[in-house]
Amino acid sequence: MKTILLVNIALLFCLGLVLADTYAPQPPKEHCYNKCTHYKTVQGQCVDFEWTGTKKQCCLWKTVGQGKCAEYKKISKCDKYSKARTLCLGHGYKQVCNKVTKHKLCAKYEWKEVCKHNGKNHGCDSYGYHFICTKTDKSQGCSLYTYVPRIKHHYKRRCSKYSIQQYCAKYKKIYKTVRRWVPVSKKHYKGWIDHYYKQVLEKKFHTICVAYAKKKTCTAHQRVKFSKKIGYDKKCVKFFEKKYCIAKKRVKFCEKWSPNKFCDLKERVRVCIKHRVQKFCCDYKAVPFCTQYKTLKPRCIKKSHKKICVKKSKGYKVCAKYEFVGGKKVCKKYAERSVCAKKQKVCTKIDTYKKVDTYAKK
Image (cartoon, rainbow, N blue to C red; front, top):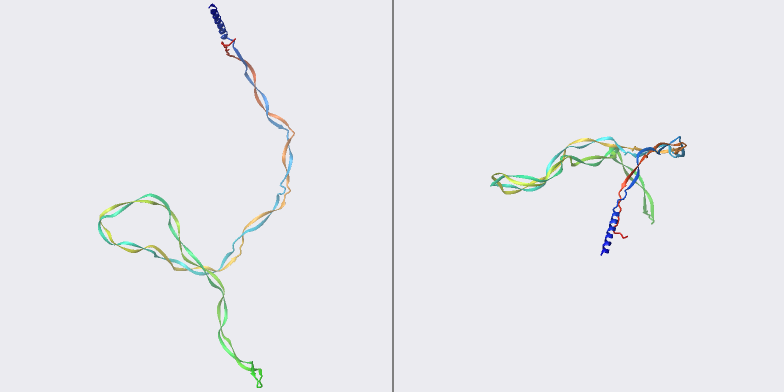
């Protein structure tokens, strides 16, 4: 029993020694370094150079302008000719319409019902309507019209040259006696056929002119152009834009109540719904026109000019590349850099702890 107690006391004593060694204070460590307190500026490397005493010299030559044209020659050519012009050498007069009269005629009829006899009744004498537009649109209309005449051309032959010829106005018939031999074939008394000629007298008639006259005949003709007005075309010369309603809503109401009449007997009558205008000339006037023309030959109205080379250049020498020879390289500018001029030693403490494992096996 005493032995166990002594062992325990020894163990506690050893444990106290170990714990005392573990938490014993250690001497502090320091970290020292050199800190610059003053700086100074010194000359660094060269950043800008300059060449002095150099000379510019050509090292490569080339020929320019060889083969180019040095002298030109101008050549003109007609590209466009005018049309042949026609001049009037002789004038005449023709009759044309100076004033047109219009008549309005009905072109289309329609049958409508009209009241022939009225009856009496009490009711609304007059109705009124309110039109409410629900949708509108725009349209373009014509406010001024003009009539352009339609012209039709036709040609007629006209004599441009006459000649006077003489002809016989009265003839006379005369005759003369002429001897003529006529072949005769007769039977001879001895039996054969005898052929011979006998002389006969006959009258020959011919006519001679006893009175002459002159007549005028046409030897050359010419086509003359005439114009005729065959109608008119309606053409608008002034337009306007207006706003119109494309959807309406009508509201009917009575404006006056009184005894009124109503139709109790109707009849059909024919009314005109479309008219046409008939035109005719009521006054004429004479206007001149050409009766003889002369055509002029075309002439040049547009020319083009072209240059051709008659002499070419031999060229001349120019320098294509230069080089600098000789000289010396001199520094014009240096860079500046900062260096430390004075240093000071600085130390700082470092806190350290040693970890001891109390349960480690010895």
